[in-house]
Structures are given as C-alpha cells and as structure tokens.
Length: 215
Image 1 (cartoon, rainbow, N blue to C red):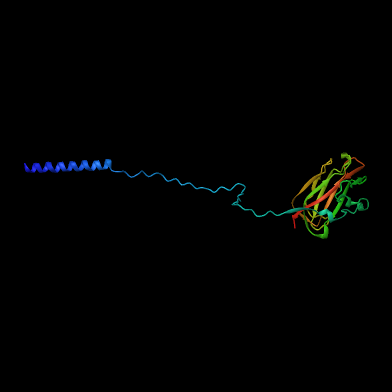
Image 2: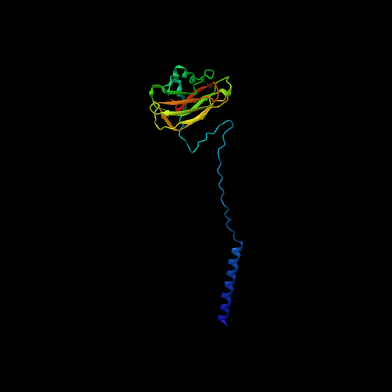
C-alpha cells in the first residue's frame, strides 16, 4: 500500500508539472514576428530651374573635320592630244566656276581632249567630278558624255589606269559623279563628247573635287 501511495503522488506531481508547463507556453508573451526589411533609396531632386549634367558612359573620339577642295581652281589646262585644239578653245572657261561661261564644240570637232595638271605637280586624290550644265542652252545641244582618267604622273600614256565614263545631264541640274577607289595622280585626262548630229555642242563647267582634313 505504501508503494502504491508513493506512485500516485509522483504521478500527480508529474501531471501538475505538465499542466504548468503547458499553461506557461500558452500564456507566456511570444516574441514579435520579424517583418521583412524594406530599404528605400531616396534620390535628391534638382531644385526648380537647376539643371543636371548627364555623363555618357561611351565616349567617341572627335571626328575629323574634312573640307572639299576644287583641284581645278589653280590647275593648268592644255590639249591632251596634239591636235591644236588649245588654239581653238579656251579650256580654262570650263573650270572657272561660272555657268554662264561655256564652250561650244564646233564641227568638224566631235570631242574635246583636255589635260588637267594639278598645281605644283603634287599627287592628289580625286574623289568626284562635278558638272554644271551651260545656262540658257537648249538641252538637245548640250554635250552628251564625259570620260575621265586620273594620271599618276600627269602624262597621257598607256598606263593601264581605269577610264570612267559619265552621261552628262541634258538639263539645268548640277550632277556630281563619284570616283571610286583611291584615284591619285598629278593630273587627269578629260574627254567631252559632242551631242550626235549637231553643228554645235555646248559644254558647261567642271569642278574636280578632293576631300582633305581641314586645317
């Protein structure tokens, strides 16, 4: 009987302790649940009237300034063939920059062959040929085509250099013909063909263009 009473007492104490622990867990203050932290970054706004400078991450090298040079402005002109045409025509009138000064190819001549020598005998790169048709002329009596060959040494010879042909406008519009590749030389040969079937063919003004770095 005594052992039984002791067992009852121990069991009762354990039960009471379990109730106390359960009650503490139920009613003890719980720590506040942790909320996620939100970080807000505030950017200073410019004051009214204030400007904000922007910086680009990519910076390009400054572009080279180029200018177009008219190589014919200080060039010399003569006949490319030994046909005495320099005595019949004033070739410089075709390169003076004025559309109201032009030449007329008269029969029996059917073309003009002009040798253009650049100033100082220096080698220059030719990038384009610009043509201004003669002013106040019937388009049907205008020169039809032009051929050009850049001469390395300024002499017309069998050099194997390419000959470029262009159809000249039969109107009042200025045309620019690009010279492909790096065509360099001390001069060029210019051939202008007359319009077929006419007694006279009028030729306007030419500019020989080169691009270089501006000083």
